[in-house]
View 1 (tube, rainbow, N blue to C red):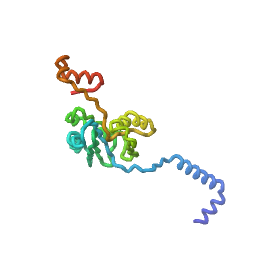
View 2: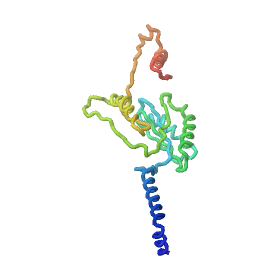
View 3: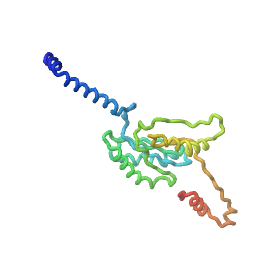
View 4: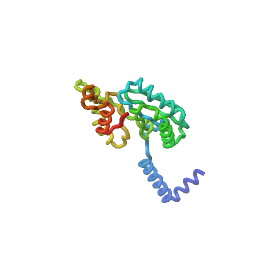
Amino acid sequence: MIASIIRGSIENRVFVLAVTAVIILAGLYAVKNTPIDAIPDLSDVQVIIKTHYPGQAPQVVQDQVTRPLTTAMLSVPGAVSVRGFSFFGDSYVYVIFDDDTDLYWARSRVLEYLSQVEASLPSTAKPQLGPDATGVGWVYIYALIDKSGQHDLSQLRSIQDWFLKYELQTVPGVSEVAAVGGMVKQYQINVTCLQVRVGRLSSAVAVAVLAARFGESHD
């Protein structure tokens, strides 16, 4: 059989060379166009719920935000695990699904259950779904440190939120830049009893005026 193959190849040199050239060209095309991942995505199907609860300690965030969310997410169809993490002013809840679960179906189910529990959260806690990305998408973590000591935690957080965040979001492929830690700058207005009596100004009116001025909701 081998002898007949060799004999046939010698007698049909042009055909053999043409087939060889086609195979080589197909191989070059495959090498050039086949997508290759440096880090294969083997992560679980997960949906992240990020809740910003400004000015609250981790224990308060855990009791008032993380625990109610994790309890509600345990009932989501297809969820196999729910993990909650509480930080200063932020809460992260990871809902892990079966490997064969469609990501967009999982996000819609989490959003449905989130709308049911959102009313029981504090008014200043604003939950939202994380970006449409897997766990492998978390590729870089950095810390903003001032070695000169000229900036406090609130100033460093302001630099992160108002400068670095927007610059990093312009990088192609970046879907979100999440900030954790630091002190969010706050402004406090102290209204004295004398001002209230003379100006006939109540605290509710003062809060309403400030909220309307800065375009924020109030309770």
